[in-house]
Image (cartoon, rainbow over all chains, first blue to last red; front, side):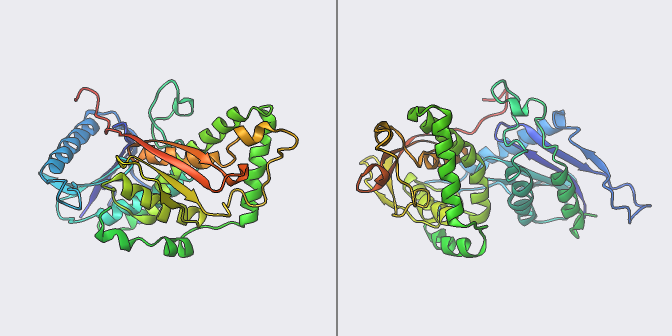
Length: 169
Length: 195
């Protein structure tokens, strides 16, 4: 059971957070400092492909159900690809939270909800120094330099949270 | 949000157990000093003050909606009617502990009024100095910030809505009324290169 990576896409389809965990440091188990990379592959083809898959699957899944008659809209939650399972949660404000794990982990919806409703809200939304629009454009000066979540507390706390899960390693 | 799950979300419970509260007088007075400072800053140009309050509210709304969704866990509403009910029974309830009445639906179900109960938490102890400045009664919408909050919050859940005051007891009207008008549902953005 392994969590490989964690992505957040904003409503402008940009990858605003990308965290990849490396699990190779088995020789040093009690080392709590995080290994892996943060926000390095936000604009990589991998991220774009991941978004593309999710986007297409999402629009397909919503068309598979008759929205007039069904009270609950169809929602994509997870799917598998080869050796990976991709867990997906989208907030009503179109923020997309994604965890990539190995194929043995069944359901991480509550974990994705926790990442959104607790860690993201506390460290980004309720932090007035953190931007909430990550789109780089002329009329949004506060974000011109960022475009990503660089908030130390957010990175640290989500790392700790995910690593504390029994499914992490 | 579906009808059956409607009962699951209880504004009272969230207000009691899961909301940070501050002293209501401190809140009222702080808001009052913001408004009066804006009046001074903009040289008693009340239209501009309304605009600024609306803008401040808008920026609050953009963030507040996420907290609202996280606290209540509501799903997407299927009609605008449902949305307004959630705004009144959950939104106003958990942030201000009031439940505005919903009235005056237009025949196409796209606009309606929210009647704020008396006392409105923003306007307790407030009197507009109409003797010194008669314009203020005609031009200033004292609680305009609420319109901005609603507009910002609804925009983030893909609803383009016009929000404005039509009546305010501070001006001597019989009630305090906010008018909401749904313009359109905003579409999800698509990635560059796709259509």
